[in-house]
Amino acid sequence: MRATKLRNRIAPGLLFTVLVLGFVTGPAVAEDSPTESKAKLAIELNALDQRGSACRLSFLISNKTGVALDALAFELVLFDASQRIISLVAAEAGALPRGKSRVKQFDIAARECTSISRLLLNDITQCKGGTLTPKTCLQAVLLSSRASVPLIY
Image (cartoon, rainbow, N blue to C red):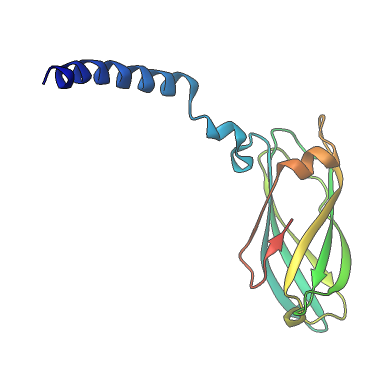
């Protein structure tokens, strides 16, 4: 009985300390999580649409890096249903103001959209703005897809 009373007195104090430390320092996992990074360059594959003999890739790109981008370009690899590489595509997205989102479309000539099973963001080839480099932009990128195929790293 005595041990129970002692434990009840210590537990509220310990709980208070844990809550205060958690409030002051914040959750420890937030800093380590790549999705919680402060600088983000979100690239969403929004749609694949057949336009005659070309497949149009539509991307929604959001600049949450904190600086205006003077130039952005990336390299994509397209895969078929057998996971074989069918094309390597260079895509220039151009300038993107800080905090702005833009839609960019790229036509892949002589390509059926149904032949594409996934896209790989192979590299960021150009990223100019503030102190950003292609490497730092690649580290800040967040990929997603609303299309019928995934966009992966």
